Image 1 (cartoon, rainbow, N blue to C red):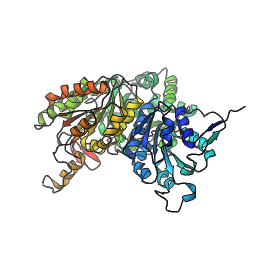
Image 2: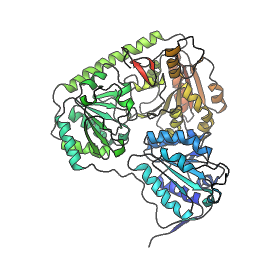
Image 3: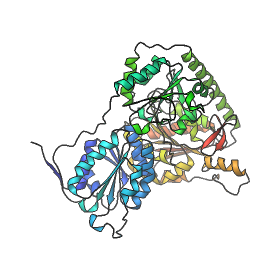
Image 4: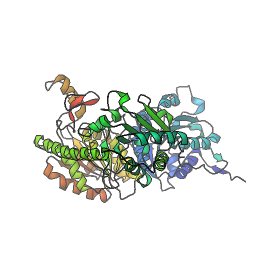
Length: 574
């Protein structure tokens, strides 16, 4: 006989379902109803009470990406929802399993101009996989279970559940135990898998492109083993970084926008790309051969909505890990042919030399009072244990960290980056969620620009209250460097407009007020001691901020300047 469970209130049912999900942290800025917090008082779930709903969703997204399980965010209604939409857009673009729970106007007041009334379902539906409003208490258990199933299955993504105010205090009865919430991993179609394997076996000069859809799917280093069997160079997309070992001999760096000479030649020479868990977004394919027919692609993706048909090739739908295992078995007798692996090694050697030369050039060109970003990354590598997770933004100077080998993930290192939406401030906030998702001893470092950090600074008391110890390395170029470089290209130095202005940031006073560490660095010689001190604080459980003065002219490798959305390549080619 099926056991019946009755929860005293709707929020009690939600709290119990969160425990079932294995949620260790909830993020948000609740509305006036504090009932959920009352229920969570009796649990060991961390609750991060944010100052801003957008940052709350960013934090929950960072948690989801790092943990591989749903991030949960709870907000109020009306403007609380519209304030959260940017975060939801990022979660959808990043394919992060997110459950957003919001208050909703009570049923009997809809259409009356009630306080903070908004057609929230219409507002949020374009941004989520599924949205529903629960007007009757008996429908809540099914809605919670469907939300969890949709968030983690297929291509992961955000879902939205709205709780009408009139049911918040009503009892909720469910007729059985909560359903399992672990994502199901569909096996690929055998015929499609075998057909693709034949094309892979026949290909010369293959490259593996590892995207964000392969995160948490590289158990036993199965992707590196496939690359070795094929003699294939391994590139990652920005969001796929951290999936494969960057000290592997076949690892070549981040693809597209972040691939520079001499590695970019590999894309012109390749005969086949095997894309694992990538939507082949514009940033990932930037710099590929202009004639799409020159470079066939075999896509391995979980959801058919991620398929790209502009290039010749084939596709296999299913779990990236199971697809890789299937190909490895089918290609058991395959051996790499030709000199392609040696070509990859030669290109990597040349890249290492070029990177060293480029870092030295940047150091020589650095003006007084500014620290070369390449020196910052090198010092960070020495100061913080190699298993660190690097959380990034996507501004002008912090973009240096996307370029291998100027920054390389250490043994067991991780990475969380914004999607192609790149909302300003995502990395700074997401680092808090990453910290709460990772084991207590694993370092979490956020490398962010000062423009992004300034958007986030209002959450410093949140960081202090949450006890989420993050090392923030803030690259200070005086504001929005990418926009300033675009303005300089159009108007020159005499423009009456400015996006960057040298001035004190004020972060030191805020950090002191909230008991956080702070150091400001204006010379490379100060870096080692500042980062060592900051890491000691973080290892002891306190967030620390290291502000580093950098120059606007310190552009990342391969760039001569900005040109709208994308940089101008060295040699004058956009």
